[in-house]
Length: 370
Image (spheres, rainbow, N blue to C red):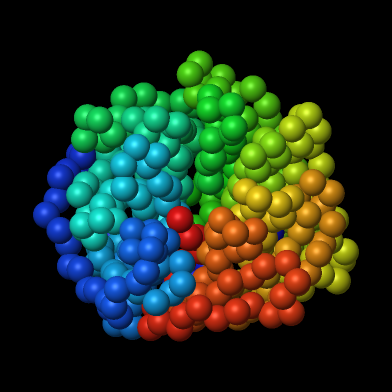
């Protein structure tokens, strides 16, 4: 179960950490909202009705949003714990990440991967917000990296952590503040070939734990099949890691599409049943874990489904029909906010019989909400 949707087109570009003037800002439905929502935004990469690539900010109720036009399609994002900033990363094989000031609704920095590198669409800050850890590829040897950037120095590149494998994708910080959880997809790509997968026969994916201080890979958990690409993940407050696979083998084969790494270090794959697994068409888009309950939500755009599970037991609690289900984030109230590639924004919570619509916009949401 994991990510990848079919809205494409990346434009290669420039170099360096570059402070920018505000890019095109298109505020919409800008009426005042009560309380905290005026300062709270969910972020996502989107395409607008004209096909422009954008970064969108939207209030959790879906009643207010803005868009910032950018020159390439983006993917995932992360929030800075130190400032009202979000960082959104270009989609694999992407060339930039963008720093967004939500209060001013503008892009403050565009930072390039640099010659000989590309990004994979995800990153995460350390607890104090100074260092940003970004998954990347070194082209000359296809080495997967975590590249480290200093936000206090205009996002200057300061270090690389080698992962001993190919294709790191989503990255999260564990509750200890020093360990990074990384989904290693195992898929070799090169900007000269766009999104073509160059090594499907000898993939070596894994779920990794990495010490961000020493750079050591402290755990490497391989899936049950070498073509189960480990892509997206989230981390619970108790240290449980849940990750999704995307199967790269024959379409008639059925394999487990979720894995779980418990706080005790026990690694397992979650069985959903052959019929349900087959209906997901070998792929999911986003994994989100609740901060209030032992719940996780997984989106499956090809299968037109959203799954709600207990992240401790792996029990399937509910499944919902949702066309082109895309990004997901916990809402801080025990439920989740979910986007659709067809423009909808929804809330899903335990006990609901169907997703509750919050907004319907002329935007094509990408696979992640931040």
